[in-house]
Image 1 (cartoon, protein in one colour):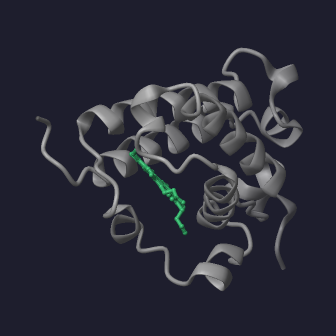
Image 2 (cartoon, protein in one colour):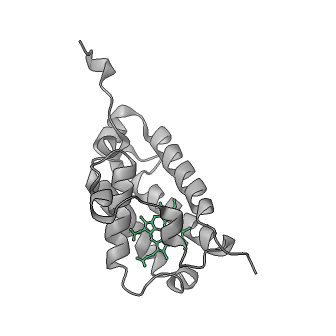
Image 3 (cartoon, rainbow, N blue to C red):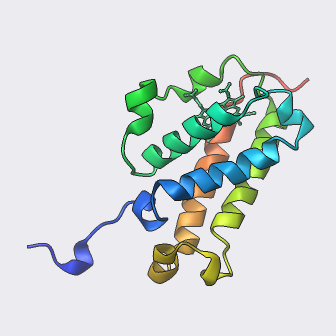
Length: 147
Ligand code: HEM
């Protein structure tokens, strides 16, 4: 029999489901839209990137596989191939995603954290896991030399 303390939650569940990723991605793209370096890379209309990125991240962190149902295997490096991503773009991308994580998972403000994260005391773990993933993932998308 499964004891209550053996119940395992996904990150997707702990942060409150799809709504968390929609808000995270909105915070992120609001910053992208103000950054000339990234405006030059992204399409003018960010509606689709907002939708597909939120769906991908929700799926990646344990939510339903809605992204793959619609788009197929993520193949993220391949999907980023058409865009020139140097260290410069990578660093701006990570800067804005880190800022979005800070808004959604503020380290020192439990009242502003999603309820389950605050209750579980896991905010540091979830923050670190997400920032590590975004750091390494962003580096993996670099596909062009720096000059
Ligand atoms: C962990 C790192 C990253 C993740 C998880 C990620 C995720 C995604 C996803 C899921 C999409 C939509 C793919 C689709 O159409 O199905 C996307 C699109 C895109 N990403 Fe990323 N990305 C990352 C890093 C970066 C970096 C470093 C850049 C550099 C600027 C970047 C620029 C773009 C651009 C330009 C698009 C295309 C938008 C469009 O035309 O629809 N991404 N990304």
